[in-house]
Length: 439
Image 1 (tube, rainbow, N blue to C red):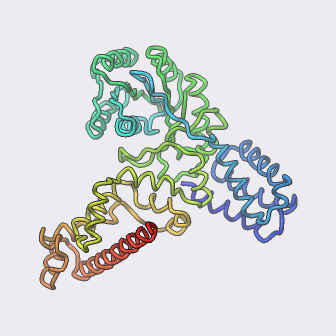
Image 2: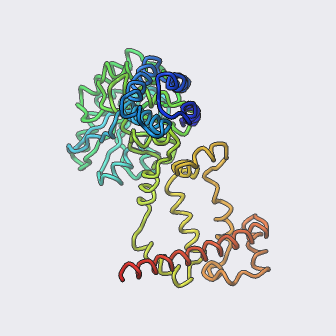
Image 3: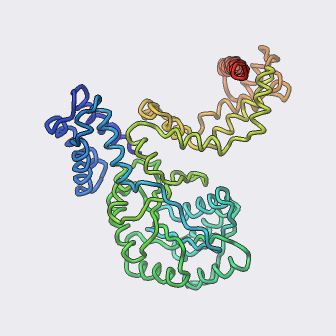
């Protein structure tokens, strides 16, 4: 997402690079390129014009005129404007009430049902809640079955009335059920249509009136650009929703919806979602998204993802093993599993400042570790615990068992030895630094 926009903005900043200061003349061409970049990203024309007008006004202020590095100052101004355009600060959902009722709305195909499951897992694991999913879509074939499968995946109960054709009655009964069973968050998956129609809007409005939800989230397929923004406007006029969810951010999207939607409906983007994995959901932070658009990475989100998988006690045990030169293939594969839990490998790498652009054309998928795991799992327990046992015949057997070559097995063992040596060296340096600090 935003790759093309990032490249175009970078190109626009090069125009002013090398100038001693910002002037009306040299900023004009830069802002023309910025406007073109926004329009190419499917940002509304009026919003793009207002954006560049704001940047120009700030760039020609007295403080900027005397700036030592005009190019860096322009990047900062554009960054701040992007943050404002996307909503400023992150916004939480309202789940303080018991039970908190969350209504999920949107067009068919926007990813409502999948997001409902992701949200259920998120409130359960990140907020310590006991959610209930409600199958309120009685029209789409297999919608109920899909939600039930998702409910099983995330270990959250699903309220279903398979024979009831009245969605308003279903959701009212579901809220009563939640009170009886002690579910403190009720997430209602509603029906969508291929386009906005009166019947659909009347039904969703009736559901809202029946259960008086504490939070209404409008789910938008970010790949639809300005169409998504226009649909959001129509839904907001009828529902007055509380926030927006952008789905399919891993697809071929230009980013126009993310950049425009706040200005059009004056409602914050609360969540972003990508892929089918149930943990692929993030709170939307405008500042972090602006960082990624401008090629600065998103190191804060990367650290947070790592901390979610970080076990203090396990890390302490691992450090002791490294110090004693006992790090083995069991530990190695355990670390790989931790990395995989953090999400898509390419997405993780793109969060590192400067790396996103370098890997944009590389095909890095979730199976990147498959060969390594196959080799390690083909080892005996003794071989995993004692890497020094690896002689020629053992390596041939491991290659045969893992469907790889002896050369690949040799390469992995060499990389493992180098990793173990480097980790031991870093541990020694860390211990020496701590000793020096005590003195």
